[in-house]
Image (tube, rainbow, N blue to C red; front, side, top):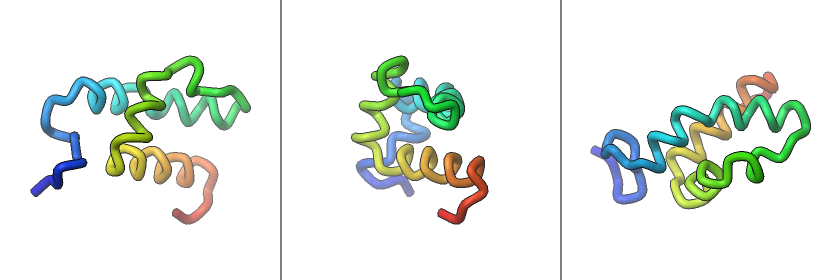
Length: 68
């Protein structure tokens, strides 16, 4: 059961946008760009949503080859 801060599976616009663009933000970060400026909606959502932020951090760690 999802907690109150878990927007995944609820049809949240923020989560939908986040889910579609999180890999792009990771790619931009790895390239040295500031993804927050190009995707401010995703950046704001990641600050507000713990589970999506965890997903983002996990993907970033996986791509970098480092443990979470």
